[in-house]
Image (cartoon, rainbow, N blue to C red; front, side, top):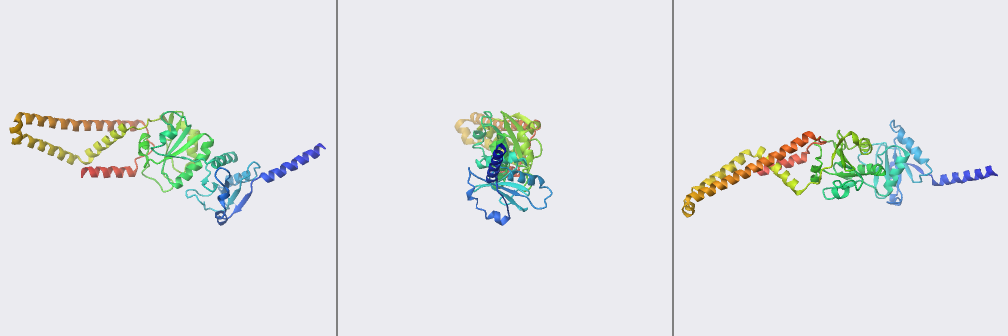
Length: 371
């Protein structure tokens, strides 16, 4: 009787497992594009897509993961297998690849190739997790960088913000959020104030799809800056830096938010350096014209007759002295700050180099000043 109960229980569990297990569908590219994704709504369901080409020598781990997830009785979602080298909806990936699909988004999975990590990332995808779009306006509010880690740990990527790059960083966010790490993307060419705060910029030499990027981790009121060459497609390096390897990189205090005074000082330094390096002759001519004008004032007979020659001479000397003091202060302050920044750059490694856009803008500004 006992063995009969066991057989009945086994039959029930087997039937339940078959009912709950996911359905693996091998499809062509055209079949996949014709799939109605409207049934996979945000917040409720999603589908898995494994893109594994035939006779792929580097796809054995992906194939094993496909078999594991397809036979997992705890996973009941739809699974598609595409035997193709083309990656639909994603421009920056190559096969083999794994995608999460619903009616709103198509996001790649970029985490460890293990069933548990994949299922956890799927849960994050269903709940709508994505990377934060950071800029000068929301950076401090979202990250609370200067007040402490009240919003958790933050991995901040300095890179171009486009639809393609956001897909990739949204894919990374699925794995990082499961590990309680937020990820945000900031374009240093647009959000210049925050980029200056962390001394970041878009590198000058880049490739189209895999340029060099910069990354920092804000963790428990401490900043860790990635100190080696890092590229957009280095997913494993980015994940390792955010989760375990951050202690192997530059550690420092989180810079305070930039104030209006900082912008004024930067403008003064930029003006002084540009004017001194590119407009020296014009500066000498301007001062010469000023001295000539003051000389004409001194030798003006009408003014001398009306106010007296000693008074006119005294006022002219005071005016000239004031102008010279002002010019001297501008030069001293400008070069002092420029020297301070240069010393800071020598002691604090910088992860990136100045962007071509900024150089062009500085040259254009210097040219307009000279004219």
